[in-house]
Image 1: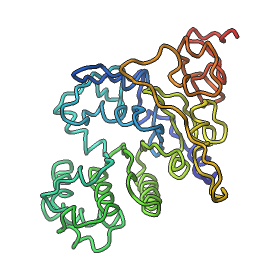
Image 2: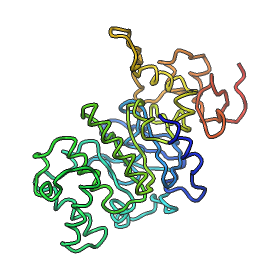
Image 3: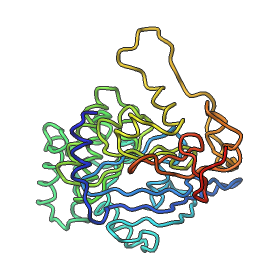
Length: 348
């Protein structure tokens, strides 16, 4: 990451109320055979004009943490959401379904992982964008069509008037994702959630879409949450980063602090697994060994203990909580940030 984005954003970080404020968030998912603790005691803020990346392996709870409070989990999934999730001071936990329908698409825009599934395959692109503009902004048919063309131009789609007449399957994966981004920003949202937006796209297209998201976020002065399993993309787009493991945020701070001075062994392992651009061909790849725990039967201590190279006996006894590692930088680790749940330093 260039120093300019992180340093400039740190200097301009708004002191007013955050757009998104999450405190003590927990999410339980219910299946026919088990209860899954998908998210446990998560908390973070995102200010206007700020981008927060949430990183972690698949199954770590990143998507559930962001979509469950909005009521956007797949059909058939039953969930209980606890804690507080405030959007511009409004508590989503007490919002009615009617109110949530107003919030989704108007105050919050979402870019989903798979645009081919998110878009209606039986409808042309134009009507899908124009519907959002009519429902959320009250535009008439002529105005909504004109605005749809403007939105496609903003997201870098050439010949936008012609593309409006295409069906999703007639567009490439990268173009479909640009359409999803256009739909997500159509209602002028305060918050944009991008859920693994570059999955299954080639490296060149990934880079283009990340740059597009970063440009739109700055241009529209939105708060943005980027969900990704690839810590390598974080520096390109984010101001702050939260690292998630087994449903828990284990480290959070500015991109510079977390990437340059990681305090949690899991963060270090993720960074070590990113191939170096100057690595010699045939050099040994450093990957994470083992697998994340089963969240239907979470371990008593630190969830990362079975895979951690620094593990000590105390790590298997109690789960550490986030503790200050300097400034706004926090980590949950007995070894690198040894603070007990009672606030006392762990006796070793």
